[in-house]
Image 1: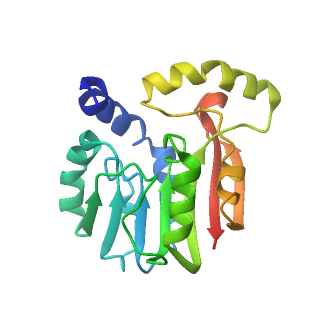
Image 2: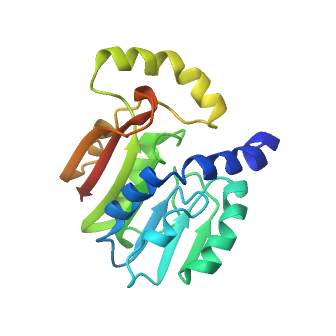
Length: 204
C-alpha cells in the first residue's frame, strides 16, 4: 500500500484514536458484546481492552498490514484470541450466519466498496444478531456538510481512504438492518467536520 499507508499512517492513527474521549466511547459501545464476534476494521487493536471479561475470541478483519503489525503487542497483552484476516471487507470468507455480533468502530468511513461490505456484514450475521457501531460521518447541519464536502478529498489522502461525508444511518439501513438504538452527536474537542458521530446498535 506504500510507505505512508503501511508505516507512517498506522502510527499516526494509533496516536489519534487513543484519545481519552474516544476510549470512553469504545468502552460504552462494547459493554454488552457477547457470543461469536467479528470485528470489521480491527486497526491497531484499540478495542481490545474494552471487550467484556467473558470475551475469549474475536475474528477480525483488517486491510492494512501496517495496522496488523502494530496490533500484535496489544493482542498478546489482552489475553483474547484474535484470528485476524487481512481483507478489505467487501468479500468475507465466512459462512452465512456465522456471528452473533459484529463490531465496527470508525471503519465504515474507509471501506472502498461500502455497499458490498455492508451486504457481507449482513450476510454473515445470524438472525437477531447485532451490529455494534461507532462511526463518524455526514453531519445533520448543512453548514458543516459544506465543510465536510470541501475537505473530503484531502481527508481521503491524509487518512488513507477515509470519507468525512458518508451518511452512516443510510449506509447501515440499506442491507436491511433495523436500529435498536442510535444517537448522533459531535465528539468533544474535535472540529465539527471531523467529529459528527453515529453510535448505536443495529439488528438483523
